[in-house]
Length: 293
Ligand SMILES: [Zn+2]
Image (cartoon, rainbow, N blue to C red; front, side, top):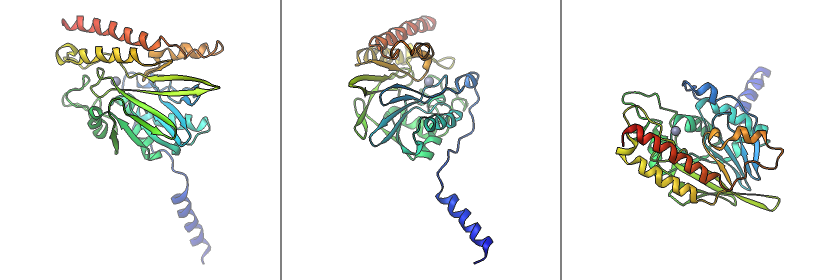
């Protein structure tokens, strides 16, 4: 056989059988995107739970005895950083079996399509968030919807599975429970699971955003979204909660906590969910006053 033919054949076989690599989608442009997407070294929060997101957008990795679970995927341009962070911890992104989404906005779901193509993981969210994730386009009832604009769009996610309120995504022996907490979007999901290490188990709560942020003209009061948010705040406050995480690290004081890692585990705080809910209600009150009720 011709030597060149053999070399070409080997190259073709290698490219077909070699490890899959991330193929990122085009970056999303926004005022705060550059800041949000600054890289951050990954770190262990507790036990099976790791932070693999960027400086301003959370992505959480859960290790199980049958592969990995990823919660949220940041911006489209975050996917490469998340991929690198997972590898830096010694895990293989191809082992991700499930990707869980908090809510269908470009800054948390933007990187999910690329991470799903890489890992072939199933993506889970609520029924109310399914359409937006599958199309990558905000519905008219989203508080941040702008007519005739694709400013809030993100790469559509191919295969999304809806999961009911109180149901769990079970990977290996880890059960991650979906708690529907509408308000920031109608499909918002809070995810909760147990993390154990050295005989100490904690309930981790990845509480979805409870912020009343919208495009001009949207009314949280008139649409009933305020009532849903008040109810969701109560649900989050009542959860078993030792470690609070959320889509924006700012909301759980991540950077301050990282500075205090030598004082035990600063992420453990059983009052954090209640405080999170109370703060959200204060902000909502201000928003409703601005809306004139
Ligand atoms: Zn959002």
